[in-house]
Length: 206
Length: 206
Image (tube, rainbow over all chains, first blue to last red; front, side, top):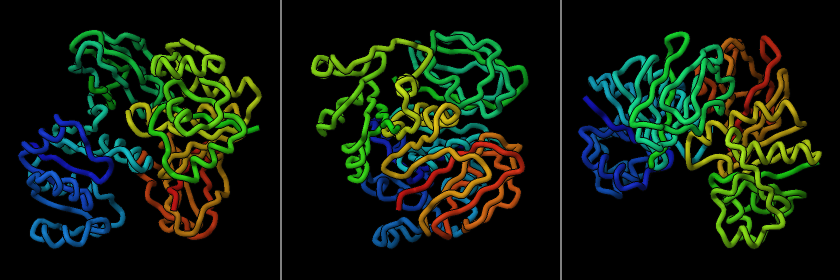
């Protein structure tokens, strides 16, 4: 069961993402991000957060959909994710979680590695590309020529690849920049590591 | 000696950043980012990169300033940084290195931890806030009420703080999200760790 989460970063402009959202089976909106959903006349199921960034008029308009969660120890994205999880959703597409404040962007991307432990599938999309979490060893779908970046948060892991333009051979990644800007040579590529682990894969949209 | 580097992500709009750039002592521009500098009539000293994203007319206009570096194993930001370093600069302000593609954003931010090893001071600024690298233990200047995020790329490090709204007490940060969204209680705050290390500090602009 799939839910969409709309965070309050940069809202996507790409038509295919807006269309995807219009056809979403369930939409959870973080706080102030409701302004975009309202403007586009997209059906919303829940609005969640500490409600510090939602417009007063929209608060009134959507008051039946609002779930107020004031917890200061969690961000709105996490509130939305765990709310969806409790409703029984196990697949998530997150939009609007990047752009604007860079500390939010860094934090939100890293949270995918936490969320993935409790659900089946989670993808974060923006106008530029998408992040997914993979468990090694794995085959990852791609498009020939698509730009690919691999992120590993444990510099002790050694990574090897197949079907990438710049092959990784037992390579550890001391920096997040270490395996960016690669390219898929086929409609899928393979990653294996010296120890089973979770990696963050970024695919730039063509 | 301070140099400004303009990367080809989201160019800043904030007036104080544009003014800072207009008064910059030395400006190194990454490739296609010259379009912003040209538009604002800012003096440029060097344009560097593999020149895959620079407009043809601008290439002709600025041909005397162009340094062509085709190296595929390095990104344009790194080419600009090491070029500046070789010229003798030891302080760097980076603009335009975030926004747009999230893999570039992640990679560029992490590169600060590499660059800091060869220079005196490096700060990455955007319309939203700025990243700096600090070596612990340290006192960090801030503004009372300013939002602060702390990023540590080694989950074995334990961090303590003083003058932050949500104090860290021997806290390790398993995720980049673990110490985001804090707040300075005074015009400076203190960080210490169980082992000397480098941390990335983000200060949101007020």
